[in-house]
Image (cartoon, rainbow, N blue to C red; front, top):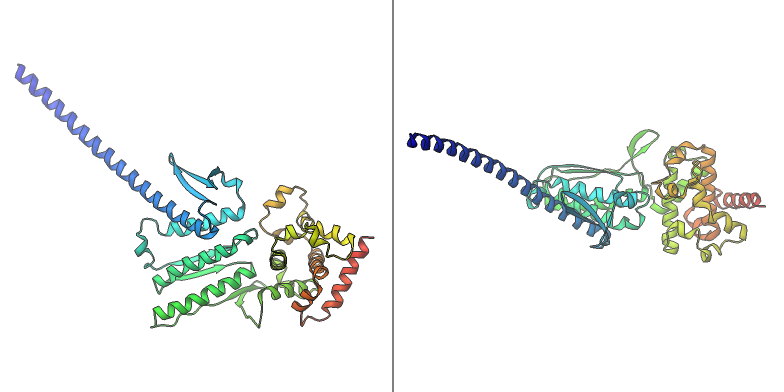
Length: 356
């Protein structure tokens, strides 16, 4: 009887052992999966952080960390929430994640050998001016690795920023030359297109120069000869102003419009007060009177809801601001535009008359 009882107990214990082993094996599989996932997360974070360091030229500006199954964003070593950083900075992090995600579950050394279609939409936002060099350099580096890795890979960059458009042109011009040297069997080319009057057409330089082109677009819009830019004129104005203030004063336009030493270059006090508030008045035309909304605005898309006459008036004001600060500079860039100096003089006098 004792033997039979022991045999029965042995069967029970063996069954328990089998169940424990099965539970152990299942648990081990889950642990292995989690460790693999953590390893992939660590690799992805490492790639993203290297990309952020590349763009910002700083190892501490932004860092992604993974703690307690959560991603943590650090700015100069301090925890920050995504809502606490600018839209432009969030876009940069998103761009870094985009390229890191392509390499997911792949060895980086072989990943670029695959065929891809890369589509990048607006890599530089209106508030990315200070980081523009880093972003475009990063794009050149990343797109180059993909295009040189596989002859069949294609890349498209879309932007409403004319300066980014020209920079992208330079990127592809350099890369196409390198690609054709690496893959001499078939000549690769790239094309430039623009959306004009609701149609995609081939972009023609016609001796265009980016900064000069921006100024001429705004001038022609002001006199009613560039209605095709109606939807994007706000962004064009911003880019031109940023270029002017950066090249001339090494400051953002918001600083230029409040720097008393610069404003002192305007001929009369009333002009100084008027243009000091120009940037805020432009943005607050959308009906908002909150400064935080002004800072959060990503571009001048609110121009789509104001009248054409108001847009033209704004274009005239911006040109007058530059004209009054540096007359010869603006006239030189408007070379070939009919009656430019006469019109600018009239527009400045109109502004002066309203201040009386």
